[in-house]
Structures are given as structure tokens and as C-alpha cells.
Image (spheres, rainbow, N blue to C red):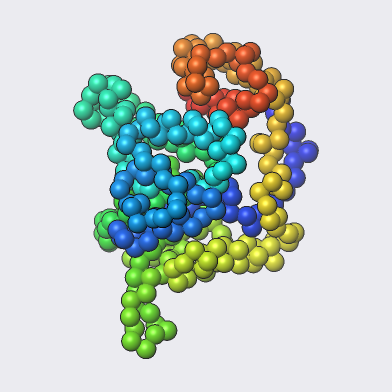
Length: 326
């Protein structure tokens, strides 16, 4: 059953960091991974060897894309893991894309994505890269993406070229992450104007210019702060409070207080939608694809009629993926 728009309430902004998505990037050793480890109840997905200096932090080494798919399956299906972890840190999103491409090529017995017929390789890789992150967000986790920095040559509206520091992610995966995140922060060292000796101090920038890229969906956030977890959180909370002053209402302080209409659909509502969705699958001759998706999400061959109410999270994920193939 579709959402009754007459029952729709205004979205309420949350001061809680759960359910917020960010990317932090900068040069190696600048403190990106250490920052991710400070977020609430973190699990660091180690796509590359940058976690050896961390102590008393949960790190899951991701040696191949199949490891990643297994971890996502566990995190989205096991309630004990949902209770244990709040933040999933992708370290790094750059290396994650490399492993994803390698896996897609192996699955299709080719050396390069461009060797897959009809130019489908890049679309397959983009969907594969996106699916795991979407499943984690629907499961209620915050996701922090870590990326290295590179200089990219761009063109302005007049066609004139300029160089800008930006995340190292290639264009296709960057487009996915950029649409997901609420904030992209650039970490770099600058001369500290407040110090007499003007020594180098780390800052994080939330607003960019032609020199470097940064962005925030928090309209009133400061352009930059001294680099620390506490300063970043304070900047976000202050921006939220300022938004409330201008738009009215109040903020909630815990994620459980949020009334998300997509999360309050009942199991019966979803099953009714699933039956209609299956009709579209059959009509468009996508039954084989949909059956494969159900098997991947539930870990075994599964029909919609066999899904139980306690599997509602998996049902949502499967339905979203089936909608994509339609």
C-alpha cells in the first residue's frame, strides 16, 4: 500500500549522528581513519592497510569484494550486530571501488570493464558498488567514507581550465557517494593564524572554492573548524540549531524519535506491494533476475510468500534492488 500523503508529517531534523552520512578526504596520514574511529560505535572496513596504529577499535579486513558482500549481509541481517555497531567506516572508498571492479571483471571473465559487451560493465560495477552502501543505510547505520586527495583539472563555465583538490574517487563511484553524503570535509594543514609562530595546524573545511572541493547540506555550518572530532560534531549541531531558528520547530535527540514514513510501513503493506511488484517482474520477463536477487539478499532461494515478518529489513532491500532492474 502506498503512503497516504494526508498522513505525512514534516520531517524533523535530528541532532543524533546516527543515520547521517559523510565523506572525509585528505593526504595520507592526515588523520582521516583516526577520525572515523571516533564516531559512535564504529566498525572500520579495512579495504587498505591504514589501520595499524589504531588501538581497541573493531577493524574488519576486506581482502576481496566477496568479503565485503559477506560483511554487509551479516550487518543487515543480524540484530546483535545492529546493536553493537552504529557507524560503518569505509577505509577507503577508493580501494573499495578497485576491489568492486576486480570482482565484476572476474564474474564476467574479462580483464577490464570495457570488455563487457554493450558497454554494460560500468553500469554493473556502479550498481554493485552502490548496493552494499544502500543496504547499510536502510539497516540504520551511519556510513563514513574515507578517501585520499588528488589534484583534478576542471573547466569553468567559460571553458577555462583550473586545478582543484578533490577526493581521489573516479567519477562513477564518486557520483554515488556524493549523492549519499550530507557532508564532504577536506582535511589539510595550514598556517595557524592564531599562533605567534604560525606553525602548521590541521583544519577541516566544509565549504569549498576553486582551490579545493568541500560541501555540506547543513546550510548554516561554519566554513571550517580546527580538526577534531569534537569540533566537527559541535559545528554540525550548531548548524542544526541555527536551521531550527530559521525554520521553526525543534530537533529530536535520538534516532528512534524520528518518524520516517518509509520505515513505518507494516509487513502486510510491503507484502501487498511485493505481490504487485512480482506481477511487473513476470510481465517484463525479469523473473530470473528477481529470483537471483532474493537468493542473494536472504542467503538461499526464497519466494516472497516464504518471507517472515521478522525479515522485513531484508524484504525492503530485495524490493529496492528488484525495482532497479525494472
